[in-house]
Image (cartoon, rainbow over all chains, first blue to last red; front, side, top):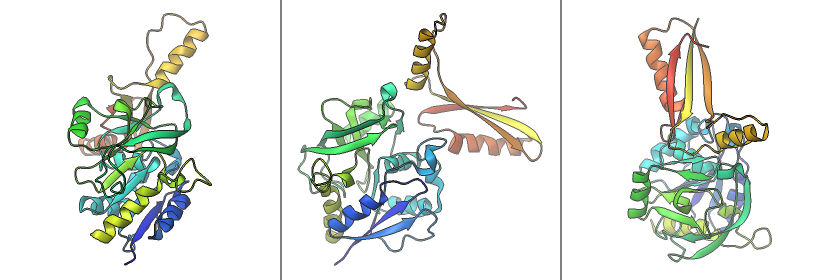
Length: 225
Length: 82
């Protein structure tokens, strides 16, 4: 059985090709989706890639969230379609209110570009089921607006429900509340992540191959479904 | 045409590193007497017609759902200002 995973290209997306490549390497069929697509072309899951959709105008992800393909993705995600938002994709998911909180300008205004150690704190989502709970991974981050912010009540709810998917080890490099690097929705099908697993699938071109498990996890979840 | 202005500011409890950087630069410029700076956004919207209650309701909706993010920002709609 072949499963297909779509990657949306918005005007200003940067990491769509790396995401497509990672999906192929994980054994799924990668499908390019355009931001104006009136259909999801039957894909079994969707990745919203990193980049600077619409130049980050207004707020990061605020304009991309209203693109035609997002109407389908928002409706699908509410029905259980697996969606992974990476970096700008995470910002789009927060703007679309599929995930709580917001991503804001980094503390001290630094654009951070680092090989970052993370702990995987929820190994049960559609995108992380191949990790061991609590495993340490090294995955690059590269963003100027990656500081996760939410109300105390929302943060407490995320922690209590085990919805923090990944946390920065050694302190958040951007001022993220509670060192949060990634979260999931109640159902576990929508995951938002500031680090870039698609840049860590091969030691030749990344700091590790630790990111590959996000993509093999979704293939496993889809085949089991 | 009628001008309607939407001002969007970060909620008071949200850290504003850009405002802090501006405050820091004021110190280096030798300006004293400034206790705090917060940076926001100012939108000038020209309506085709009058700013009647229906049109203003549309602007409020736009401000709440697109021009601002309710998780981190507050907004104020003002008619006729610039």
